Each structure stands twice: as C-alpha cells, then as structure tokens.
Length: 172
Ligand code: COA
Image 1: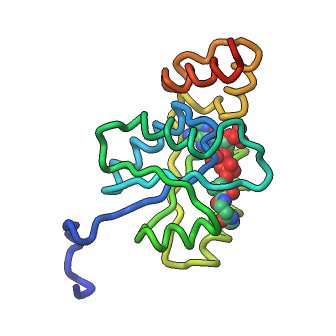
Image 2: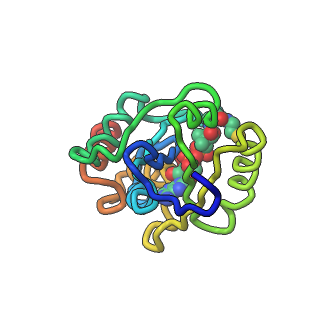
C-alpha cells in the first residue's frame, strides 16, 4: 500500500485490541468499555493480567468463565489469561492497540505511566483510552466486592451471573 492509498479493512488486516485488567470481577463499567471497543476494532481480546499488588477474590478460571458468559455468542470477543509482559502478549496476538478505560482524573497518572512504559517497550502498540460510561464512573471491582461482602445490593452494577457468584462466595 502506498502512502496515499486509503486504508480498507479486509479479513486479512483485522484490527485487534487487547483490553487488559484484573477483572476481579468484571463489572458493567468493563462491559461498557468492551462494547465500545468493538465499535472501533474488529476484535477485542479481554486479557486477564496480573497486577502484582492485588490479591484476587476469584481464580483466573473463574474470572475467565464469568467474562465469557457475558459474550456467549460473540466471536469478536476473546478472553484469555496473560502471563508476563502485557505488550509482549499484545504483540503476539497481532493487536494494534491496548484499550484502557478512564473513570476520572484520578485514574490518569497511573494510566499515563502504564501507557508510556508499554510504549517504551513496544512502540508499535498504541494505548487507546475510552471514557467510562457516565453511569459507571463510581464503580470499581473493589467497591463492588466490599458492598457485596457486607450484604449490600450490587444488582445492576455487575452482570446477573456475577452477582450470583458474589452471593455464593460471601454465602449470602
Ligand atoms: N468500569 C469499572 N471499573 C473500572 C473501569 C471501568 N470502565 N476501568 C477500570 N476500573 C477499575 C477496575 O475495576 C479496577 O478496580 P480495582 O482496583 O478495585 O480492582 C481498577 O479500576 C483498575 O484496575 P484494572 O483496570 O483491572 O487494572 P489493574 O491496575 O489492576 O491492572 C494491568 C493493570 C493488569 C493492566 C497491569 O498491571 C499489567 O499490564 N500487568 C501485566 C504485566 C505488565 O506488563 N506489567 C508492566 C506494565 S507497564
């Protein structure tokens, strides 16, 4: 393709984005980002990555299952666990971008640091930030777990099957 030719997506140049996170558990805010990612990319790979400073409540397999159950018939969404560096994983998947959701200004410093470090390691992969839907800017996986742990109602903030899993886990 010369510099002036328009970019016409075909089956062979599918645009893939990786959406990484801990997803412990997946929330409606995360789902919103996946849905919006699908309007920009042909495929979104939800990558359950390790954040060394977090002790997850759900195992990797449980988190994979919960996310897959959100997209039962959509082959544009793939769900996998990632070991090692995120950018290495994204590169091997043929991804053009890493998607991250921003909820508030307070997210920015940390996200900026991650994005710049990822770009330093692998310049071909861009980080794309999507604003989290207004309805979900106040939620995080931790706050959902905290409310559920104390018997509070998280209906509507996580998918129904995730709500059920939280009830089971906290024996409510
Ligand atoms: N809706 C609701 N909540 C959202 C959200 C949205 N749209 N976007 C972010 N959040 C919340 C998450 O629920 C999470 O909440 P929690 O802290 O209560 O769990 C928090 O915002 C941010 O977490 P998350 O998006 O899951 O990222 P993280 O900070 O846990 O993980 C990784 C960052 C996993 C992407 C990063 O550690 C990584 O890339 N690890 C792989 C190893 C690597 O390459 N390291 C070098 C990185 S430079």
